[in-house]
Structures are given as structure tokens and as C-alpha cells.
Image (cartoon, rainbow, N blue to C red; front, top):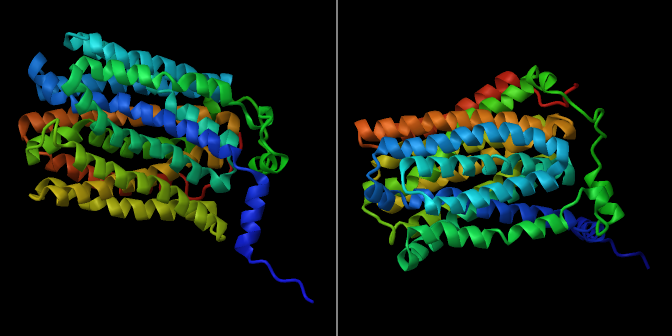
Amino acid sequence: MAAESVPANDHAAAKAAAMGRYRWVIVSLLLAAMVINYVDRQTIGFLKGDLSKQFGWSEGDYADIIFWFQAAYAVSYLVFGRVVDRIGARFGFGLAFLIWQLAHMSNAFARSMGGFIGARIALGIGEGGAFPGGIKAMAEWFPKSERAFATGVFNAGTNIGAIVTPLIIPAIVLAWGWQAAFIVTGLGGLLWLPIWLLIYRTPRQTKALSAAELAHIESDPPDPVEKIAWLPLLRKRETWAYAAGKFLIDPIWWMFLFWLPDFMQKRHGLDLKTFGPPIVVIYLVSDVGSVVGGWASSRLIKRGWSLNAARKATMLGCALLATPVAFAAMADNLWLAVAIIGLATAAHQGFSANLYALPGDVFPRAAVGSVAGIGGMVGAIGGMAMSKYAGFVLDKLGTYTPIFVVAASAYLLALAAIQLLTPRMEPVKL
């Protein structure tokens, strides 16, 4: 009797089961850290109305607080990119996490503009290490064929954090006051750190990893060099392609993060008790965009598309989906505005998942953190400009329309810059 044929899907499932999935434990840890990161980062946005009344902030004052956070974030992103390349993702990410968690709690003790700016500068220093550390970990634990998807999954933690924030911050504030919002979330988040230090190692240092999974992780060609100086990276167009993309799209995400509660309050009359559900919906949709955007390009690569075509086709689709946000402020219906903004934030996250993969796609692993740091610094500088622009527009015009028009065009401009600087994504020789 002839042996029964086994479907290809069953073969793939059996192979995956034999290989193991320990690498996804690492993604889960990073996802959890990004949830905490975004709760910490976004808390002040939800308290903007109350704090503005208590401390007499103008739109420009609030913009200045965000500006100095982004300035510190910009410098730290660059520095931590180098740090994680030198000391590794385990201790580099852990150090960044400790700094930002303590800084987050210090907001509770601020009583002046200077106090809040100081606390936000410290927060920016710590949070600047999150993505360089995370991208470094992705480069260590995933081959290129899976990297964008894995990055999309851990980056989805930013959306979950943005979902969690409006669910917990109003309840904490209404029960114990605004200071407790920083203290309670800060102390709870610190529980993550010992788990990370206990579990994270490089693949070759991880005893629980099977030989098959290690071989899968190391299936890309080996890197030709170990130590890379700054100057060769700054000379490469691929570095500036990544940086240009970050400069153009990061400010849009910052804008959503720090001004969306204010938009809901001013345009649709919501407050601390009521703007939670619409914002939760927006970031739930964003989560889908983050995972689908990373999955889409990884799927195209597995179907035979080149890395260059798969990444850029996915980014083009995301860029087009973001364009309707130009009309978000014109929508009189709250849920129509939520749908338009949710589509844009999902498109942002899908675009970002592929952009974050770029350093690992074309640079040796030893340079990934440094390139990510350069791009993150440039992106934060763009965010600083957006903060000043948003504060100016809202003070002078009192409308979000010009801000959303900028958001609608940013992704197509970013893809054009990436294409101009890197017509073909190929391994960089250093």
C-alpha cells in the first residue's frame, strides 16, 4: 500500500514544532516592555487638561515640555545605540528601562514647569534606549525572513500601552489623584526588570534553545566584521535612508501620542472620563496595523519577492492608507474621526515595522544598534519640530487641520526619500 502523502502545511507545522519557539519568548518580553514604555510616555498627555488648569500651562508651555523630552530622547537614542552595540541588548535595554521607570515616577514630585521639564528629560534619556535595544535583540534572535514580523509584534506593545493608558490612568487619578498615576504605574512596571535580566541571553548563551532553532536563527550569512566605527556608518546612504524615514514619520506618531486626548477634548467635547473608549479603539486598530505590516512583507519574501520589493511595496500600501487623515479634523462625527485616525495610526505602525527592520536587513549585526540610534535621534529631532509646530498652530489658529495635513503626506515623502537613497536594499560593505 502506498504511503499517504502528508500535506505541506502539516510538514511546516511539524518542522516548526521540532524547531521550537523560544525566540518568541524574547519578543514577548520586549512587547511587555513597550507596553510599560508607552504607559509611561503617554500618561502626561491624558493629564494635560487637568495639569494645564492646575499649573496654568499654555499650549506653548505643554509643547515645551514635550520638546525637551524629545531633545533628551534624541541624544539618548544615539548614545544608547552605541551602548547596546558595546554591552549587548541584555544590559543595555535593562539600564534604559531602569532609568525611564524611575524618571516616570519622578513626575509625581514636579510642581513647576522646570520640574516637569526635568522629569521629562530624564524620561527621554531612559526611553531613548528602548528601540535601539529592541532592534538589537531582533537582529540577534531572528533571521531576516522573520525580522519584520517579529519587530511588528514587539512594536505592537506601543499600541497596547496606548490602549492600557486610557483604561487605567483615569481610574487611578479619580481614586487617588494625578500624582498616583505616575507612582502606581511606575512601581508596577518595575516588576518587569528582574524577569528580563533573568531570561535574556544571546541565542548561543541560551541553554533552552534547540539546535534546530539556533540554526534557524543563524541561517543568514555570517557577518564579516565585529567592530564598526561611527564614520563608516555616517558615510553610507543606507544610514541616511533610515534616518530620513524616521525624521518624517516619527513626528506623526509623537503628535498622535501627545495631542490625541487634547484633540478629542477640544473637537468632540470629551474629558478624562469619556475619551478612553475612542482612543482605545484607535490603538486597537493600530495594533493590527503593526502586526499585519510586519507579516505582509515577511509573507511576500517567503513567496519569492526580493527583500527590497517586499519591504517597499508594504510601505507604499501603508503610506496610501495614511492619506485620509488629512480630513480627520473636519469630521463632525466622533466615530468617523476615530475610524480615519485609527486607519492612519495602523498605517504608521505597519510602515514602522518595515522601517525598523531596515538596519538589520542591510547592516552587520554589530552595527544595528548604532544605525538605529542615528535614525532615532534624527526622528526625535523631527518630533521636536512637530511639537513646536503643533503648539504654534493651536495657539494661533486653534484647529488641528494643518497638523493632520502634514501627517497625511509624511509617509509618501518618507518612502520617496528611502527609495532615492536606497534604490535597492542590499548588504552594506563596511
